[in-house]
Image 1: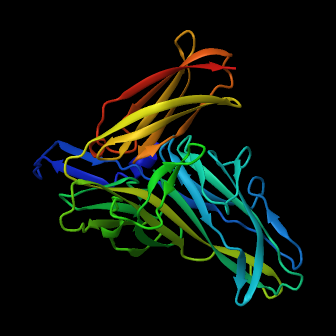
Image 2 (image 1 turned 180 degrees about the vertical axis):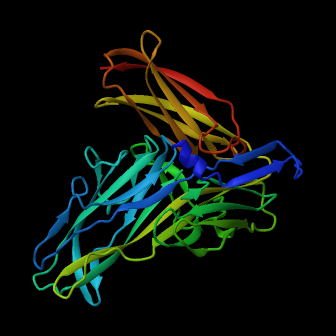
Image 3 (image 1 turned 90 degrees about the vertical axis):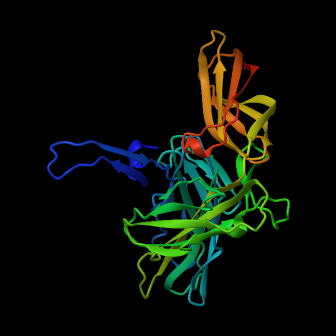
Length: 165
Length: 252
């Protein structure tokens, strides 16, 4: 974790000031701050399937797809984190549904899919380590629209759980 | 961004606070809850959270009596919010350490989506991110310690995998750091690891040391367990004597 990040969240501070009159030319200030180690989880990139055609499966590969979703996590170097997902089987547009055929995922300690470690996000918990204080989790999948799939905006909820120890 | 990521509450004050910061460009909806869970290790030695299906009296759960104020909030871009955590333990709570996990759920303000038009199919996901953080409530004088046994090592590819059974001693969880150093025949460090550990009851973690460039032969693996963590303020950690052990290993 970088020092700049630590200092960015010097959230609890207590200061004691020596008495300084308005005419003082100089003075002493004793200040102290407690630096609280933070964690961050953010969506680094949206999973984007782009244009989807009726009757044609569309896939985005977690390990190589340019439009794979990405979550950026930070934590203490060397620490273990559990990552799990709650994933939908279908997207919905009003009463219409669009099946999600499969999900896939991979994670890496650098923001690069090359060499990432694959996992199945729909199959329970994945453990990983913050080798250098960061973890990047990529998510992809396959949607399977029907031949007569009605046009529309299809949406679903995706939940990422990250447990720290 | 959440700070701190390890939360401690003392019975004398019965409260603490956490700070949430939204570094993003859109508002975020936050909801805070608590559950009872503690770390165990899985079949490959990775820490994982165990969440009992139901609670019984033997489980030192604080989840039912930790309240967050506010529980729900909207944090605007680049704004921060302080959340106060207040403990309302039951009357006559025995001395001891009680555990919970704080679940901080964050939802983006708007569903990300592709272009929606009358002819095409577009797809969008509503994302929720849940950060699950350890919360420890302490009452009275507590002690912790660690028992280390069953140290084993195996080679797997270009790594040496080291595992040990770690058993908590005393009346509180052992929060600390495991360090390992692989010493060559010349006594110099050839590889090492350093990982935070959390032993609530018993775990059998596995640690990896990279051995790709090391010649075959005998080595000595030195292990050390310290009750300190770089990410947690020392005054919050219960101290225990350092533990050291070493075993002979042979790299193929």
